[in-house]
Amino acid sequence: MKELADTIAAIATAPGEGAIAVVRVSGPASLEIADRVFRGHAPLPSRRPGGTFLHGHVLHEGQVADEVLLLIYRAPRSYTREDSIEIQGHGGSAAAQRILRAVLDAGARPAAPGEFTQRAFLNGRIDLLQAEAVLDLIRARSDRAAAAALDQMEGTLSRVFGSLYDRLVQVAAEMEATLDFSEEELPPTVLQDVVSRLQGVEKDAAGILATWGEGHILREGALVVIGGKPNVGKSTLLNGLLGIDRAIVNQTPGTTRDTIEEQMVIDGYPVRIVDTAGLRDTRCEVEGEGIRRARQYMHKADILIYMLDASQEIDEDDLAAMKAKNEKNTIIVINKTDLPYGESIQSYMTKQTAISCSLLHEEGIIAVRARIADLLRSQSACTHHSVISERHRKILVMAIKEITEALIVMRSEDAEVSLAASHIRAALEHLGEANGRIYHDELLQTIFSRFCIGK
Image (cartoon, rainbow, N blue to C red):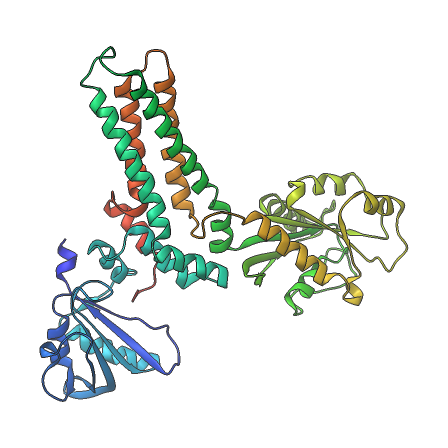
């Protein structure tokens, strides 16, 4: 590819103040560029072996740009499997920009987002699943998310998808071979064996597909929504879970008119927790929009916390709202238990698993947090540590659909092996896109454009 003939450069460290800043350079002219910009003890960087660290200065237009350390990586022993250098200068945006300008003027071009990792993929150092794991690790907001990303970087998910692909290739080869024989010439066990193998691949693919729930939670954070009528204590609960006064708390009903979203970590899981407007009939257009948004969030929540006021009666609106989500994913919190109970609340508490609390006295917050953690663990119970993303989910759905179609054909009385084989080839094309055995420019652009520049 033409792009691989270029030498690219970018600042690899985050902007802002810090101890050091790193400028990364990769491509065939990396060491020549180092010779042009770096001044230190002889010999020149291009005559040094890989793994060498050099102390010196970067020069730009005859002036010292910064005092630096120069790290030399020779192909294929580098992140990109190309000749590469890293220049470690003083932290801060100005010093790093001075070094980068010197490198660009010496013959490099600015790297596109994710281009270093894309080169690692194109040069065969990592596959597409491992490349995506790099981004997952950078974006990880909890230990569990980071552990899953590292597991994927080590190739666990690659081996799982690779096994599915290889097994399906074997089945496809056997099916293609049968096309050269008439139905009378084939032993009856041949097609039965093909069907059995296809069933095994279909079952294992479905098992991997089941990890999407955990992947969604680890990558995006579980959406935990606090809903209920006005003045039941939703904002007080949000503040209690966060440990800060994030939402305004007032006895006036309708104080919260829009959703308030914050991020936190519970039991190692990233969580997006949302406080919503109180559910009631209103003529206020602004409050009405907030209530509409509240219902939307409650509908798509991974976990719904529905709050009740112990001193008030439960009505049909409460019952309908509590049934809007699967009961297993709903936490009922009854607040203000320091007040006299309403009759329906008292009977409801004896029949349902509800958390009683008095948030005014900071009672019950630990119990709510513990119940959220229990639900997160139950939603994330899977056999694979590496978990699939939304892209992988779509690939598996399409591949399983093709395998299912092939099985339908193979089980019919007049099994058309050629038609079944075409479905298997389609399934292979889908699976090949998972780890990059099959890829196109649009796919790479979609994946690597989400990376930061310099990675």
